[in-house]
Every structure is written in C-alpha cells, then in structure tokens.
Length: 551
Ligand code: PHE
Image (cartoon, rainbow, N blue to C red; front, side):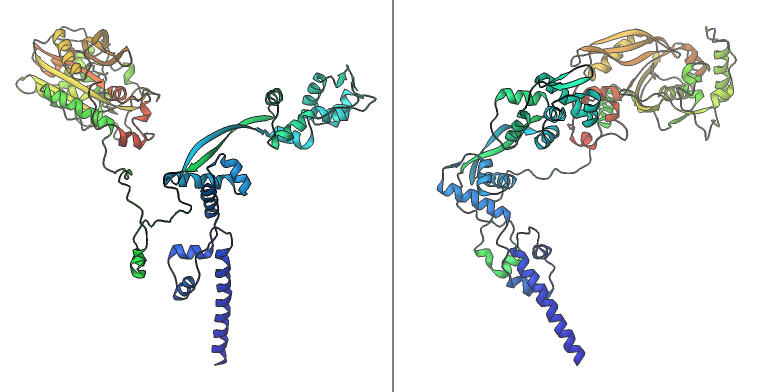
C-alpha cells in the first residue's frame, strides 16, 4: 500500500515537471521545441495527447515576426525602399526578411524588385590593420627619434610588417633608410589607412581615390549586396491566411474542414520526371546502322565470341606472325585457356604455305610459319576475324554471293585517352561476288554512308595486310567544317580468299568503321570516356533525344 502511494506520488511529480517543460518551451523563441517535434511525429501516448490538446500552438516565431513587420509596414506605407535598411530598423536579421519577401512575392501578396549594391568589405589583412594599425605606422613607431640600425629594427618587428611597413613609410617620406641606419624624417604620423579602414567597416562613405589606394593594397574587396524594394502586390492583405494543402482525417473528424480555406491546385506545376528505361546512344546508333544494312540486303554475322584464336584473327587474314599488331603491346592475349583446341587442319596447312612460300600467284612472306603462334587465344582485335570465319564457311559449300555485316565489340591494348579506349565497337560490311572491282566498293560506300547523312566522301590509299587495294574513307563534316576519317576499306587479297577454297573469279569488297566515332559526332561528345565506361553520366543516357537523323 505504502509502495503504491509512493509510485503514484513519484509519477505525479514527473508529470508536473514534464508539463512545466512542455508549457514553457513553446513560448520560448526556440525554433524546434520538443513539443513541435511531438506534434510533427504524431505518435502520442494518451497522456501526451491530453497534454497537447491543452496547450495552444506556440505563438511566437521569427518567421511570423518578419512577416508581420513587412505586411504591417505596407499597410500604412507605400513602399519598403530598401530591405537592408528596413531589417536594421526593425532589428530583424536581413536574411529572415529576404526569405519572407520571397515567399510573399511568390503568393503575390507583395511586389518585390531586386536591388544590388556594391559595397566594400575588409580583407583579412585589412581587418588586421583596422585592429592593430597599419604596418607603416607600426614601423614608424618602432623607430626612435635618435634612429636605429636596420638589424635592430628588423628584430623588433614581424618580417611582413617590416617589409610592407618600410616600403610604405619610405613612400610617405616618413623615414629614411640609410645603408645601415634608419631615421625619422617627420616628428609625428597619422594612421590614415587605419582610420579609412574603420570608416569602411562602419559603412561610411570614403572618397574614390582612397578606395582605389586600399584596393591596390588588397585591404578591401568589393561585395555585391542583394536586397529588395517591396510594394503591395495584387493579392496584398495585412495578414496572410494560412491555406490548407491537404484534407486530413483529423479535419474530417473535427469538422473544421468547413471553415478551412484550401490552396488552389496549380495545374501548371511540372510533375516529377518519369523514370523509365533508356537506350544508350551507342545502342541507338547501332540500331540505325543495322537498319541501313538490312535495307541494303545484308545478313548479320554471328559475333558472339570475344575470344578468338590468333589463326582467325591474323593468320587467315594473311597477317604475318611478326606483324607488330600481333605483339602483346597491341593485343590482349588470354592466359587461360591460352590456346585454341581446334582448327581446320587442311586449311591451316594452306595458310601456312601461303605465308611461307606463297602460291596462287603470290610469293608469300618467306618466313617459317609457327603453329604455336596461330594457336594463341586473344580478345579479337577486329570483327574481320568473324568475316574470315564466315568466308571460310561460305567456301565450304557451292558458291553463292553474299552480303554480310556485323556490329560488335573489339579489344586493343591501347593507351586510353580522349578518343581511344581499350575496347570499342566495330561496324563491318562485306560483299562477296563474282567480278567485283574497286569501283563497286566505292559505289557501295557512297550508298552506305549517304544513308547515314554523309554523302561527300574522299578516299586515300592505305595499307592492310589482308586487302589490296586498301582505302581510308574520309567524309566532309558540315558541322565541324572539315574532313574527318570515318573508316577503312579494301578488296580482300587472293592470298586470303583462295586458300579458303573460294572460286578464283570471286572477289570480296569490305569496309570497317567504329561505332563510337559517328555516335560522338552525332551527340556532340568529345571525350570517349563520357560515352563508354564507368565515368558515363547516367543523365546523358536519360536526357538525349529519342531519335536523331543524319550525322
Ligand atoms: N579490320 C579493319 C580495322 O580494324 C577494318 C577493315 C575491314 C578494313 C574490312 C578493310 C576491310 O580497321
């Protein structure tokens, strides 16, 4: 019984103390009071609920003070001409006033006009001089009437004060600096710099010559002050009515929805941007090029093997085993599995022979061809490896003309810079038929590139181990106003085609280009790392246009 009484007494005591705190705090100026936290969280115990219903909301807050000041002033006066002066007169922080003006202006209760003023503020160095005096005066005071040696004077002062002070004091003709002796030239000096700095600190007006001099010594700097002039707006009222933004369950229960004024819907407000899947620019351009190939009657080659043997990537293409591109500086070789398991043996034999001693009218390279080199696995360096597999497969059946294309990834051991990555996408097209000439290649290239919006083309002789003749392709870019290299092309060599088993009167014309280059030109991207890889900004992918025509 005793115990129960004690517990009840203790509980009442705690409640009284808590109540005291709750009642007092809302009336204090504290912006976040425990009571407002409780109100916001809406997780009341029955006790707290009773407590809250007994306490009216806190009447004083800084915001409402500033708002009352602005609206109240405009009730009796035409205009607040300068929010800065107004804030000072009312003893309210200017930022507070500015926030309120912005909000009232948004609701058209007031009409606010920007005012900008340039004003001068002291730099940290200027601050020091205003406090302790200018270095020239400090230095002058350190020179006794009978003079002092340079060393002694230097010892008395901080080195920066000595340096600046002596230059200024000499300029002012206050002191004379002999070889060893420093002496006064005047009896007394005035610290004009210090008094000017103090005047500026106090917002007093200072002549423009003085300002210039202080500016030159970097003792003051200009600062743009922003404020407002304010008039009544079209919806002016001496008091802003708080409008409700939501109809809540509580409004319905209490029935106060009948008196509430609701905020109007803003049908012009922008909604949240919708999140949806977006295609990367490379995918979009790839699709566009794919469609061009399909329209021109091309079939897609299977490119689903990044790992390739040196044989298909190089040897089958009549690329000698000593070729610098076959070095690990240029090509990524695989450690595991490091070699290929299967190659068509009779074809390998023919390739070996054409490299070593030629045939089919060729002299070959005249070196000892090594099987181990051909077996090495690598990440394919071009999709021409896929073309060589396809042409070999084609040669195994009765001949039929073909148009093949592919767009996929290739890998090169390159130094990464603005225009190069160690991997990129290659676009490749080839036509295999009887009686094809260089003229056909040029014609097909004109057809293909003009469908991409590039109709002005130029060709430059080039070299590839697997094509003869070979041509680099240039296109005139109207936007960039210059010729840009867009691809490489040629007619596959008989040394490549005949060992495969293709008929002698069959030629293959082919070309290749990167997918990244036209995409970068189309999307105005000048750094490849912005287009591909881990540094890509996702907003580039989200915000680019759904479709773009021409290059
Ligand atoms: N394989 C060449 C390259 O990587 C492109 C090319 C393809 C050139 C077909 C000629 C013929 O640049």
